[in-house]
Image (cartoon, rainbow, N blue to C red; front, top):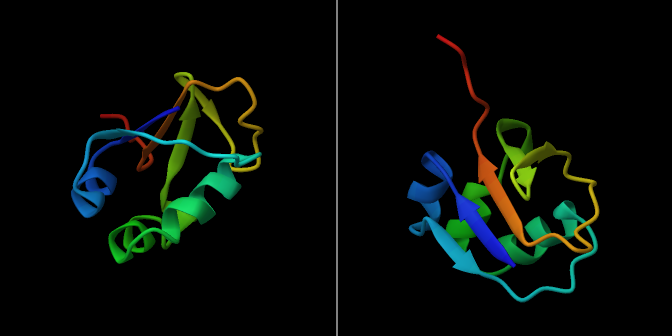
Length: 81
């Protein structure tokens, strides 16, 4: 699946997007796998309350299943203005 990173998440990881092979059942499981990769991922996912996630371009939760998902995007909360 494609994993996209936006704003400071992208800055900490150093990539805007990557292709990830995973057996993760949920978004939380995927985050656990990513955090174990390198310190830069650990830093990006250190505070999940500061992140939002979208699955195939629809806002979702971290406990959402990944079955059939083609794209996961991580980004900070959006503000209006």
